[in-house]
Image 1 (cartoon, rainbow, N blue to C red):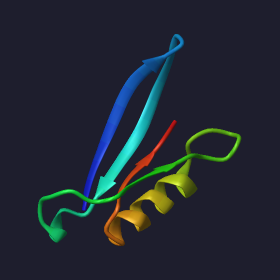
Image 2: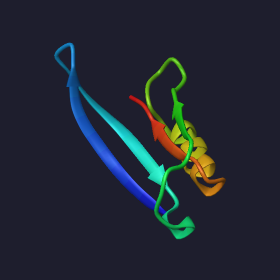
Image 3: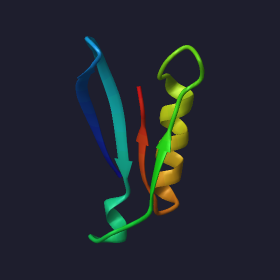
Length: 64
């Protein structure tokens, strides 16, 4: 499982998203999913859902 943290700025705010992909499935294209958090910002639940989707063959980004 690959996990990358992506830092970026949006409207003057520092943001951090987490990207998950299971590299054990080999290289190549795969479907992608954006996972958005609850109202209080990116937390453990959204990150866990993105990681779970990656184990199912998706490229998943938990967005801040």
